[in-house]
Image 1 (cartoon, rainbow, N blue to C red):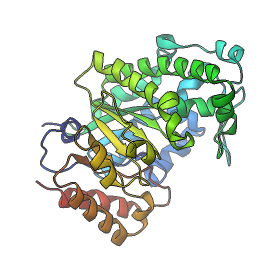
Image 2 (image 1 turned 180 degrees about the vertical axis):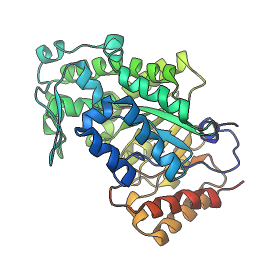
Image 3 (image 1 turned 135 degrees about the vertical axis):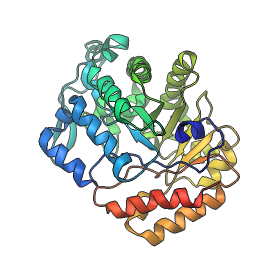
Image 4 (image 1 turned 90 degrees about the vertical axis):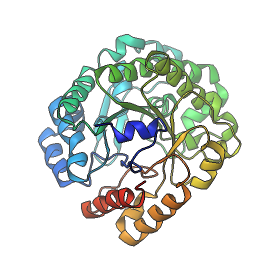
Length: 345
């Protein structure tokens, strides 16, 4: 049976509009929590292909989404480049040796050699593909170079990104060198995910909104497009999803370009705006506010509105960012079933 999700990504007609949820393998599922407890450290779960495959498949089996998203973490890339990574309770991911100079950067490995170290990710994909139903798709992913660079420079998550942005304006050459080095790793990392069996790949730029619109292309988007071009030259049949969060002003100014298939629309960007500016070039994905899942009434209001708006367009139902840990599983199932019901062709 044809993969409805892949066909939709390529703009083909499907019997209904497919649906998946970002960060779907996660904290809202009791079954995930059980596996997480067995793994102990979060990185242990990322490094264990059998466990990672199990939590990848859970949302497909339990919630009924049309695509599984590979379980991993975007920060395995800088970790394998040579940065020591720890997940600290109450703080999140922390790098003990942030990049602040060219000398720091020169110590890191790069390119295909670094991507070759991520064997546990590719093994996870292979296990998932063996168990995933033929009509379901598997999405691989990577963080965008800018988002990865912010963690590498700041040393952890940030609300202000002041160290990264200070570098942007006072030492742009160093920042571009960091972005270029990360880009080379991500190119091969996603290529090897495709070669392992990923049906679709997505590039997340979670911290895109930290860059002012006039600088976004220079310090993020052009690197994402470079990655997409690299992949499309080698696998033109594999859909690519771009998801930059919080770039409504960038979209509104007509600055989105590139050889990819699907544009992920975050919940802060009006879908009507994305449809007007991008709908004739890309399939659109999104963009329900994730906290609507706390209320079935609020969920129905949004899904109905999206279904009506996009009835004459190309669309994939999804949340406008990651699902939250205390969302009732029943409500997640309701969202998926409602999307399918309201979008039957």
